Length: 197
Image (cartoon, rainbow, N blue to C red):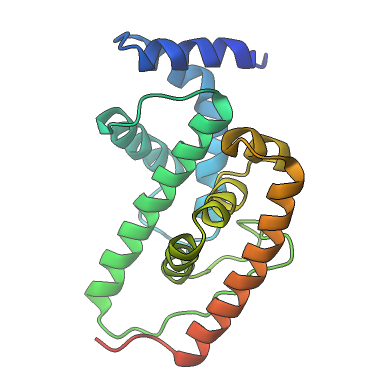
């Protein structure tokens, strides 16, 4: 299948941000494969038999994106970063609701591997990672954004640098520091165990 040129996606994003009603409908088929890839990465870290399927995650992200106030994107990397964030929020909301239903179920520990590659180890605790990422973002918003873009969005160092308008070296430095901080935070959360209900 032929790859859609980045400039075509950028033009449609610009048209959408300017209020052209059909731009998003034209955009989605062009980016659907990438959205499916992102959704598969997310779903790979969920438990087997998860009731939310990859296609449903993509569709729910589309609905939330259409309903959101964020319609101004400078480029495709920024668009995919927002899509990744929306998918993460969908899964975290689902996990929190499931956890609330279980009331007291023991949480599986979360370990970040060296590359922070999503999908290599099923059963990661997305809620614990989300909580740690929120704490990191409160302390250092840019480092939180780097994690969001690299870990959840799957963006390269260069793409993340373009979205954040910083150098690739700055992204790499933030990425290394953020990974170290998150590992320490998650180890502490695992030692403390599940929060009381």
